[in-house]
Length: 308
Image: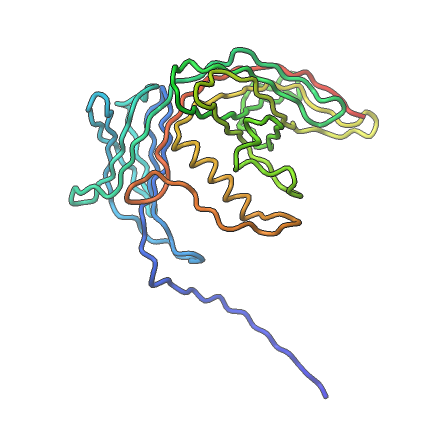
């Protein structure tokens, strides 16, 4: 008896009759910066077709002064960007975004506050023995006399120097950041130390408890390297810019839920895929984020080194 199995595959586009596009807004209100707002809409899951977004207009209001700024749209097929040079965000300011349809009705809106920046009192960086990582320590002090929790994020920017004629150009670091500091590891987004093969975030978020004004926070990062069979691993001279962001509560919960969702999708080698996680949104009438932060930074020089 001869059995022959024949298989074929054909991609079939199935449109969801249940899907109704929802507005998605993405915009960070950063002190001393002009507004930049990205607006799109949701698409059906697993669909390869992209539908056109409706025409919208938008404005941002300084809630404190009551002044409203019309935003200039740049229309594309499936998204719109809005900008204006008339408004520069300020720390301590409260801002509200409104998105209008063609008849002038408000389709979506959100309100958030830009915190006052914290201070980097001191900072240091040093290699960890014969490890590939460097350890950074920053002393942080809040200038806000508040009794509620305060929220922060740390981001790194690197400028590597492989040759003497290299220009000093910083780029956003995508290397995972590790920490054993309890202010960081207590947050639910940070991977459990018991998870096997878990990734680590590219930024670190943490908060001060009520009445807490300062802390010494440390973490580790890894730079690129080259291998030489005669000398071993060569780590280049580089400059490290540590950016400390005082972020709003909405920003904090959006970013931490986004990291948590990412780890849930990746799963764990031993425990499998975690339950689904919804990313937090503060957009009324849609999805996304309109949230603020204020930032300060410090730059440190790290000499080249070799590991056998």
